[in-house]
Image (cartoon, rainbow, N blue to C red; front, top):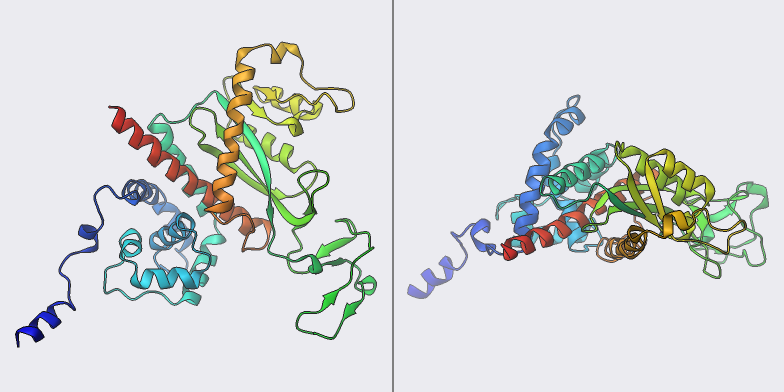
Length: 367
């Protein structure tokens, strides 16, 4: 009888998930910042669902779950639901009780797609950034910009001629996965397009590197702590990085002059002139090998601030490194500029949360 009581008591637990998560767990400060951001998003959620009511999954829980997927590099919604089934830490973060049912993966994906149709990622990013500014973690004077290629969710064989009649010969031995012979064929974005993701363009980061179907992800960071202050994804055209950089600087609405650092790819007369018109001093790396020489001269490079900007701008690679590895953006799992851009911005917000947690903890230790 005593053994039976022990066995039955082992099946139940009277300790809540809140009590089981250690007080110093790294997710606690992130969850606190997320709650502040979600309260700020309440009007946006009400506007989204006013015509058909609240969805089967509350948007607050949906966003927390998507954030966990980024923070813990969970590669699919099915695996994410499996983690929610038995991972007490995940349940606590999302706001599920121990005995709450976990959503079916297809239902979760449908509700996620509804969020992707709105501008929730940008608004969530803005809420997180506002917290960083209130904590005085950001600079409002010195910035750096850069772009990176994000491989599209489309294969090379999907990149076919736009005219159906001129498609390359296809091996029909395996209809389910046919072999497309495009060797020796000149392929470019003017004549070809991906049948899987028409908005993805063939691009490569530098000479001698393989061209892949890609998008161009761009971020603007502040130079004090390397936090992302703007994120924008575009089609991977030859001018996408400079166009996105100018747009992000313009959206800041500068009233005072700022500095913007960048690599040699930004050293063009048009871009430098555009920045100056936006009250931004271009601290771009000089490209003396460009025809006509560099667009900036000693009047800019002789200052100590220029040298500091060139050192600080390299921190932007930390952002891209995190987003591509932890955030799983080396190759996106979505299609189209709108959806890929949503995920890109949301991942940038996740990076900021992790970075802010570190910075705030260091401030507490220093005090």
